[in-house]
Image (cartoon, rainbow over all chains, first blue to last red; front, side):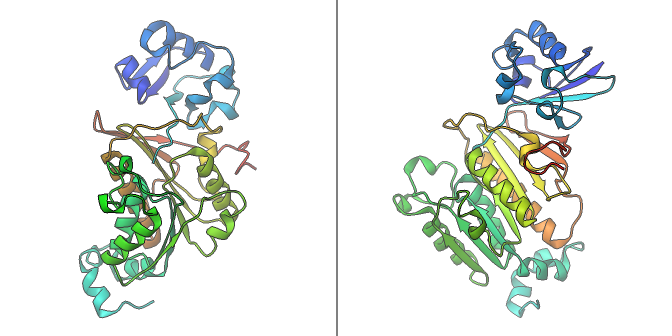
Length: 90
Length: 243
């Protein structure tokens, strides 16, 4: 089981700040969130292209999936995945 | 750097904090901090750093004040509309504290001028409103090996982290690619809160107080009134700070 911490629009869409779900990689985790929580779909795209996720920050234990294996990043028991949008206002 | 009697009196309340003390105040007096941006974040950051007694503060901004800035940019008032943000900032800040040096630099930060603009700085506070310039500053502080105090806002949400070159993740480790530029909605109090956190981090850094917001990203959501900390790690493949 993987702990998913959700922030901002992702937290709103799921209605919780944290969910614990089984997933063997980020792709499966994204698919699982999309199928379970309808409101998250517009924010967490179903695409298989990791570049489309550039507007979504996904960290696995504090590291961006961008530098890991993108959607193919493997997950193991007790991993913590954080999902939030980048924000840049000031 | 010794403190004058006036300074001892002015900063008495904070000097009385045990872990800060006279030494902490002396360290603030020695510091030169660049506040990059005089908007919402820059307003609260520069107000608190000025009041706290940072010895030299340079404020960089190229914009002029508009009516739509006033919901959050509390350094600027109705009478300042049309004036440059830097001019307005220097005018207010010198009235708050005439014992420190305040420099206003009316320039747009870019790849060509960034190292010149940050010359002599001991730290940079990120008060920008776009990722493009944030990344320029991020790369510059890595070269100069000086700390970078990141802050950002959107609506009721805010983020902050303290970046120490080679010791913590840099901005690009967390946000590898600049998201599309768009007009950002912001509740005025959000940069007030995040800017205050950034200023506190600057003060703690120079005063030698540990437990900085390093290797952690603070995510603030004022709708739920939550402050969450996410552990973040350096990315060895980061194009800016990777090995």
